Amino acid sequence: MDCIFCKIAAGIIPSKKAYEDDKVLAFYDLDPQAPVHILIIPKEHIESAAEINADNSAIIAHIFEAAAKIAKDLNLEKGFRIVTNCGEEGGQTVKHLHFHLLAGRMLAWPPG
Ligand code: AMP
Ligand code: ZN
Image (tube, rainbow, N blue to C red):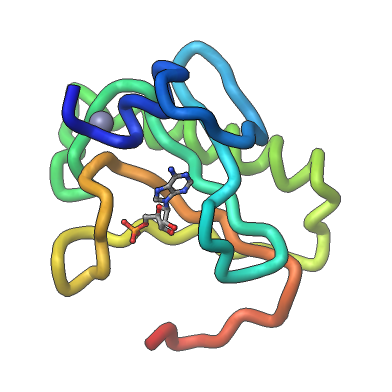
């Protein structure tokens, strides 16, 4: 297993958990870009958004259900952003699909 997020999902590398169920894990980013910065990942290894297909796309709905639960739990009623970076020009550094959930400050648009 040569994937840092697979190791986090398996509990081999520790993380500060925000939410977990049988299919997804959400944990706090080590280098937060906003007062709330959580990563939501499928426990199953999927490299990026470019690898989503008819066989694995149900996990995306599940991840967004988890995001809505986290937003309710953390009282993010002022708003939040969910973003996934894909590939080199998309700014993806970890090649295991993850969604950044950012909140707690006014977020700029468009992103840099
Ligand atoms: P990306 O650049 O979109 O691929 O996002 C990868 C994110 O993973 C970055 O925001 C990193 O700060 C974060 N990250 C990397 N390693 C860890 C870790 N061990 N625990 C928590 N967050 C991490
Ligand atoms: Zn992985």
